[in-house]
Image 1: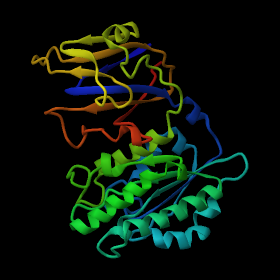
Image 2: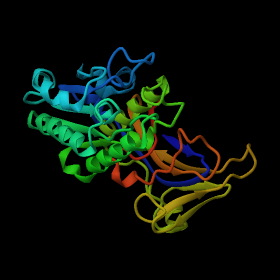
Image 3: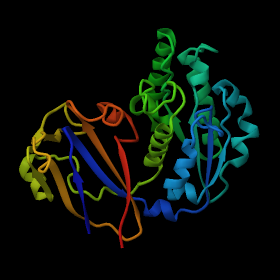
Length: 323
């Protein structure tokens, strides 16, 4: 039996821990990756995100993966090449297939200057073809590029709004525009291509979406019902942490924890939950919605107001049960 210790400044609105055991045991998985230079080998970074994902994910380790990403490629061209590429890898009877598409940068960028609407039409064509072939669709918003002029950024925002407007067209949604903004010098080399840290962060987004589909092992991870209900569920709050209710403040519902710095490094603000029933040598995913008020690192802790629109809630930590 282990416990989770969470320390932060600001607000912790939700916490989940889910098992990866079912995913790890899955066989007959096929994964097609389609995209541009951010996904294509060789990447400008030492390692690109599919490498990191294969290292960290039981799902990826046991799957047949084919990366069709090509530097400079566009969604418009991928529609034309789909039949000769990802369609040939489509899952057969008894298999599970995932089609991961992260590509709109070259369509929306200063080279093509395509509109958000036109770019979205190409994305929906690819999603539809892949879904017809039996794939589960992993869609992505577009982070864009730091150097784009305002007109291109406007079309990128329009594309992202359209992607979010119809969740029936895909099975999972990753939001790098929210969680991996191109303004970050930690996550991007020059505002377009990932650093190693950016590649790892994107890999964690993918794995967070596709892994850990079991039930939440934390009781009252949404902190609903006030202080008594939170304490009754097994939470222990220390040094300036309080259970609070407030409509519009929480990620879902009205409960959240308000965390304040205690001012003493030896006695940090903390929320602890003991007794999570983990198993030896079994992977787990922990997710949290955190909003900070001063301090911290903006590249890691950002406002998560888009929690409800995303299939990937907040930062992701991966861990394993110990023997």
